[in-house]
Image 1 (cartoon, rainbow, N blue to C red):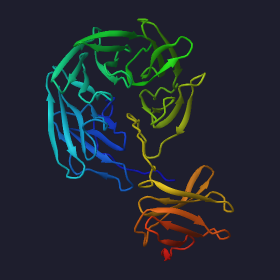
Image 2 (cartoon, rainbow, N blue to C red):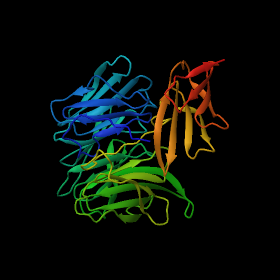
Image 3 (cartoon, rainbow, N blue to C red):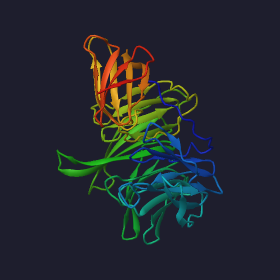
Image 4 (tube, rainbow, N blue to C red):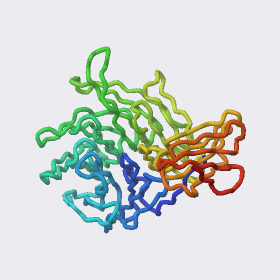
Length: 406
């Protein structure tokens, strides 16, 4: 199946680790120069919302969606973004296209380089700047708690709020150190200082907690990638300070590959996507030996470096509202038909792992296609049924219109 291609507006900010984000249901936000834009990828009719969500005076360095499980849901959404030394929380409506600035945090004294809305606490936003200051901002009380990193180069390039514990944050520094911070009673403590990377920590991602069967001990797991061309899986032992296990993967040997990013795969805690140059890989974090598997090599349309990768849960990939029936014809190798929830039928041929001859039929279909069946002896005739009770016949060998019968 040919890839969908959508051109994002130009931006000088792609090298920031969190200048792009996705919601769990298929919205994309990204910083474009001095504004934040939103794409709606939830349906087949992909659209860029007609408003830049926020206009900033300075370059946008980070964006993050609020969790859709909290007070922002349905058509109401919110995004936090950076501009210079300020943070802005903007609420916007997907139907009316109205947007308003809901809150503002101007207490950073240096340029903010990364920001994330907590996935567990709808009121908590965590940000870091180029001088090593980390701010825990409780929006509900407008309380800000600070921590300043004590290192020679305090530039914070990456940050990840834990997906299991609302008060823990991983911070990646330019010098290669990762700090695990915990916010308790308006005080920030350093739980772990992870050493092992030699250069700029470019991306961090928490994995869900699991039970260590051997020691019956709850652990946290963190994945990091670095400019030194290594990926590390850290296993942090609870109640045993400064004690951890780490597995390392040497990513690539090419001198030109110096930027990497991570993205989780929805509903999977064992696999992740890793980008390098203009290629994508997957890695199984539960394997006995960590190894990268090619996903997309020499990604077409991307001649330069991939700086950011985001993924989300989509019910039907590029096929609209979700397909309700699928049938493969047995006597014609690889011929598929799909009844799709956006009142269409899609047919395609699978050949050597690639989908070709994609066609879409929609004439006279006024409701969801719920069933498709190929003719038992002719592979160009396809019958279908719709949610409102109609039955139709499609001749896929010609460009004839759909014939609807009772």
